[in-house]
Image (cartoon, rainbow, N blue to C red; front, top):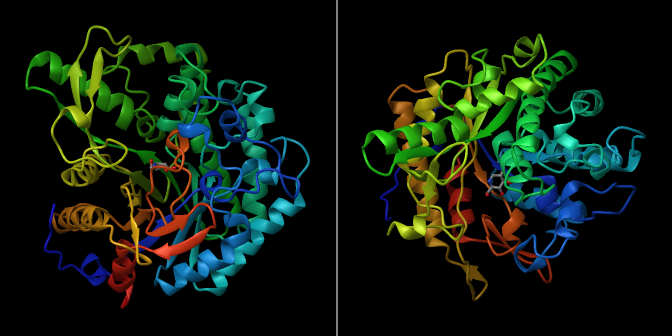
Length: 450
Ligand code: NOJ
């Protein structure tokens, strides 16, 4: 999709935030050193057959040791904001007991080095790597997670809040509950409604709880949380396909934001959610609400959905992009830039969202290194065409205040392992060498006169 891209960062306004995102488990490695406890991802990846090629992130891209090199590279690429996550089990190895000072020291080093380099740290508290010890007690299905999460959040806010002002509570709750507690394709590999429903409700409560704690504890804090979202298009404009699309939209795009905004769970549009009642206690509706300073949305593609009698609970089925003769990424996700525009628009329809930021957007393609260069034209076009849509949204008067590219360096892409490279910077996984791709060089020149 060739674009004749002419935009400059200034066209997005001077307060627009630019940055890159990554996550602890996908980059840090050092999975069992300096007192770190195991997480559900350390455990899941150690089981045969769960991950492409049985890969794991025990070393990942060695961010634990290479953080200075990576942050310096980021600085050299004019990137002003860096979103990363904290590993709960590096900080509290069993999730709820002793604090591991060496884990705290590591994040202090990362945070301080960002600040030294004039890069603002944006910290996500929970990007999917629950301490394994907590999973053994039920993890997200156990309501006790409210107490565990409160302790972890309070500690992080007290320890890092003097320097970190930008926080996000959860990363994509729909994905970690759906893939991890319903489909079983992500850690901890649990399946079925009996796991999914309590996980949904406890994540909803922790999302708001985390927001309240951070707001109260971090002086001048700017507190947010993030959601995955994809435009849902019905396969055909008929009643049953439209209904299927509405149900998919409810599950994928509305489930976690609506109770947060005081609207309750969207049970009207997806009746199976009525079964959440079994886990809801009196007063939980109020406890699910919180007014965040910003909402992060993460968009990669759109989904085309058709009616299917055979899919339980939802009677809706996603039609794979590879079956639709469209341009796709290596994840088999359709390249469909208007999706980001339409999701910005959809989230703008909610009242009470103070600020909306794209906290992730990016694409995986096969990158070939040729004479020390990586000409990742498809990724470059992906970024440009999505930024055009973000700009168009702004021009149309929609609230949109920032853009973080996913991701800085190539890293461990969950069930897909290392084959799906999303980075602006290429990593040779055998020697950890970093090489800036064409897309990274372009991002650098784009951000030059910020
Ligand atoms: C969303 C997740 O937050 C991130 O961890 C993942 O790597 C990207 N999407 C790409 O799939």
